[in-house]
Amino acid sequence: MRKKNTAHYQWAPETISLCMIVKDEAQNLPQCLESVRGIVDEIVILDTGSSDATVKISNKYGARILHHPWNGNFGDMRNYALKHPSGAWILQLDADERLVPEDVQFIKEAIKNKGVNSVFCNIINIKGSLIGHTQFYSQRLFRNGAGAFYEGAVHETLRIKGNALFPSNIRIIHHGYNLDEAQMIAKSKRNASILERQIMKNPHDTSSFLHLSKCYFAQGLYELTILAGKKVLENIDIRTIRINPEIEVFMIMAFAYVRKHDLDAAERMCQCAIEIDHDYIDPVFFMGKLCYDTKKYEQAIIWLKQYKELREELKKIPRFDFKETYFMDVAYDAHLTLGSCYLEVGKFDKAEKEFLNAIEQNPESAEAYNGLAVALELQERHDEAFINCVKAIDLKPGYTDAQENLRLIHNKLKRYETIKI
Image (cartoon, rainbow, N blue to C red):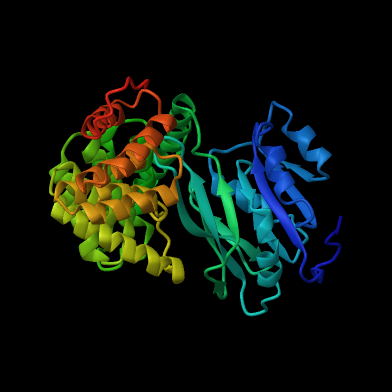
């Protein structure tokens, strides 16, 4: 372990210290520390009062363990921990995160860059039943001694001088939202309590109101979600919202309006976001889904085609902004919905193509095979339709729509033998 013995201590070049704050993370910590094995030169862990095996596990991995009582402020805890790493670079992870091991080469390349003090990593949030996953970029790898500090009591933000490398190909997988309903509600209540105290101190803190709206949504408090969202819009300068996280509030409010069965209000939220930022992919996709749900199929097609174009552009050139993106990687859903739209407007050949694209994205999709069967049947291609209908039922036994379609196709083929479904 390196020690800073003098005020003139020089960090060894290209060395990395993992810096973490933890409490009762025995279930998550081993997977996190395994993901950085052989990558970091030092592990510094600040424990804020664990009662499980967290400290024992930390010792097993050779961590330098610090202790500090929890004070209800994540920013404070991170800033205390930042005083202790001895590496030239600091990698910040939470216990419920995993570094993608294949990205080690990108880390090695990044820390050789003498012109930057921080590196934006791609944070991929696994969200379970809410949405498959979301993603955003965050400064998680940064130079030690460049004045880095954290700001905010929860969902804290790193502040650091100097240039940043954006984007990087370094991926961090976050499992902190992939929880069952009770765990998610408990976590949201904890964070909401911290945010509410923060807002009492600063009633114009748009970041806290944004995150509070997310916490309320996770708890199913949709009216409070919308009220917190409106507070964001009251306090933000709409001229600067384009690249800021606060633009997400339109999507959070749209989600809440959908849960309240107010689809018109949800559409208005999406339209507001698109007016501010024409290249914001989330409201474009969501507008397509909303138009489909309200049977405006031609409009849905326009929005979903725009989504696909935007997605391709952003895959080639990621944007420099700070918002969380919910619908960057829902190509399967876009193809499936487009296929259904084309069926409704009588463009069966285009529907066929979209369902095939959906199957390419998700080969286990019974819905895509059933949609393909319908598109083929409407083109009088009964044998092909029959095969795809059977495939849908094989993938999803008891799929009533596919069973009914199979019977109809079977009758047209004049196959009257008994079909066991």
